[in-house]
Length: 81
Length: 144
Image 1 (tube, each protein chain N blue to C red):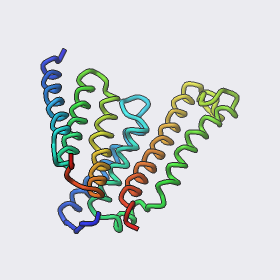
Image 2: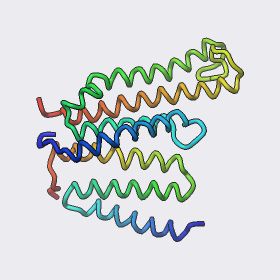
Image 3: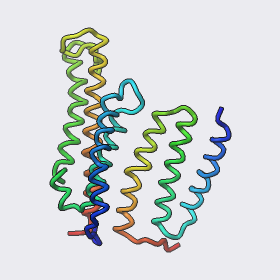
């Protein structure tokens, strides 16, 4: 029904995933992962799964980002690959 | 955090925002059985509000709001509420988590609605306790 919206969200989703994978700065990767999570929550809501989208937005965009940031503070900020 | 220094704007915004997040989380928990959401989502939002204060004001001040030692007992109490609801239904004559047999006055349909509310509250408390406890343990590791 909303195929234009879904295609746009998918394009941004893939862009956020590629940025999270390729970024050298781990903090950038974490922020990009949070964006990925929030975009996938929007996709779930657009597809009609409101409960799943709610869970994804709360967990992926709220708590797991904070836990990743704390882990980066505890370790290093740049990847060495 | 190690490089923590007090910032008035961040503290003001987070302590203004945190009660509203908590209120919405309570709404999500208590309306979980007839709208999207439930114990897990509401509990995670409640934990996010607590963690927001911890991030903004630092660990020492945040102890006044939610002490570090409270996390694990709260999680255990949540699991006990869930399990106790199931066992109470068993004691009332039904099978495990069969809310219609809860030893409370009321019709079977009303008892089913009440029973799922107990379970949501238990799940919410457990999720709050364990998530805040995970954050505390992650922050504390390596500092001793």
